[in-house]
Amino acid sequence: MRVPSSVASRLTPSAEPPPAKAAADAVPARRQPAAERVYTHVKQAVLERRYEGGMLLTEGELAEAVGVSRTPVREALLRLEAEGLLRLYPKKGALVLPVSAQEIGDVVETRLLVEEHAARRAAPPPPGLVEELAGLLERQRVLAEAGDLAEVAAVDRAFHAALVRSTGNEILTRLYDQLRDRQLRMGVAVMHAHPERVAKNIAEHAEILAAVRAGDADAAARAVHRHVSSVHGLLRGDR
Image (cartoon, rainbow, N blue to C red; front, side):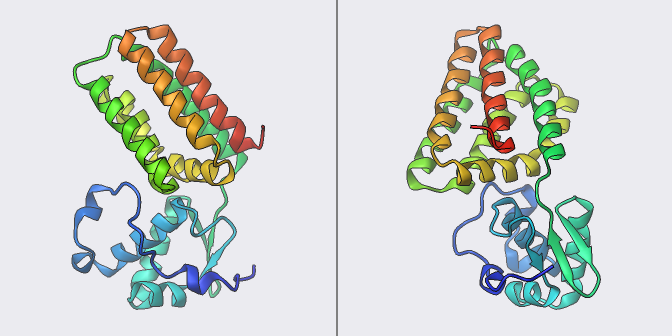
């Protein structure tokens, strides 16, 4: 494994705000434990593909980038390895794991099972769902115009999560939430590789919203199936 010459500069925290934050991220960075700051920094960079698959990260460079000692860096990297984002190599560093074809297939299969069911349950829509989806869709349009692909991917995921959450099935919602990190990483990858896909993504979300608003369960399920399947094709390298 070889450390790219650009790693040092890319390990510096971005001045741009990261995409959608977890609840823990609401705590000001200066009040977070050192290991949590490293964890947040590295995880966001991996999900946004600033640290791409195949890149080797070293403890020293990460410690310098976040402004901590090496001990909390090791703790954070062990946690990220357990989540399947990194693989640790003693005395060398942490390798950012590429997204595998198996992972892509597994995520898409799970998404289709969950989201098609949710789309059918959402038509007719429960109170507030149409307004929530419409707001997220408009937010996505604004972010796309600004060229913020990481946030577009985050709002994309929020759109689908709102659909699943509307089922009222807490077990299904928790299952879907477990896909969050993988969805964000794959979504950013698609938008970087296929920038033209952003406009199509928004158009397909509009189709889903229209079917839900009309209370057409079959049309909503078909729209979700087309949308998720087309993303799968791009991730596999299809055209």
